[in-house]
Amino acid sequence: GAGVSQTPSNKVTEKGKYVELRCDPISGHTALYWYRQSLGQGPEFLIYFQGTGAADDSGLPNDRFFAVRPEGSVSTLKIQRTERGDSAVYLCASSPLGGQTGELFFGEGSRLTVL
Amino acid sequence: KQEVTQIPAALSVPEGENLVLNCSFTDSAIYNLQWFRQDPGKGLTSLLLIQSSQREQTSGRLNASLDKSSGRSTLYIAASQPGDSATYLCAVNGNNDMRFGAGTRLTVKP
Image (spheres, rainbow over the protein chains, first blue to last red):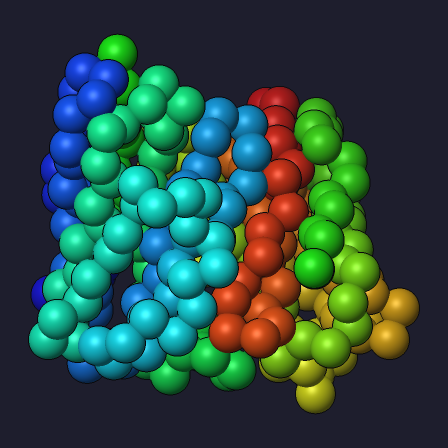
């Protein structure tokens, strides 16, 4: 596609439920990043993929959060037993090179609201 | 851990003014620095990317500088317009991730 695509754009769920957020990167981009952004804050790093593997998952807040990228393209961020504090905009970015030199291109984000 | 700070947090200027946004970072061992624009409820739009070996980058009315040794970058906006109103974020790339500042919320008044 022309840009990074994220679905759903909005998700409202109840506390304790399971949520999946999807990211479709720009075609051919090897690197993929997930960020979380709360109101009035800058994006907070969660995880970085180079190809199929998670090169850095140090930003995942706890073991309720998990992300996969099985074929090196689409990625899914999975959140188990959601809590109200998980409410935020989840941003995905891709990069043609990633790592040390790549420019990041962001999607519009998925707004998650946990009631 | 890399810490990125942006000053000021908010800025309001009349149309036509030139302005400077500041970004500082604590670890100078970076690969590049990227400036983004974010409109309310939207994703991030890349403005300028400066590699660690570069001193500045220009695009139209925007000029970004990088002083890696002192841990500073500035974004200069010339002849500001109401359409420039947005939040401007800087992000520093080191060790395979990008760390963001909290942003500067810019309002340009007609």
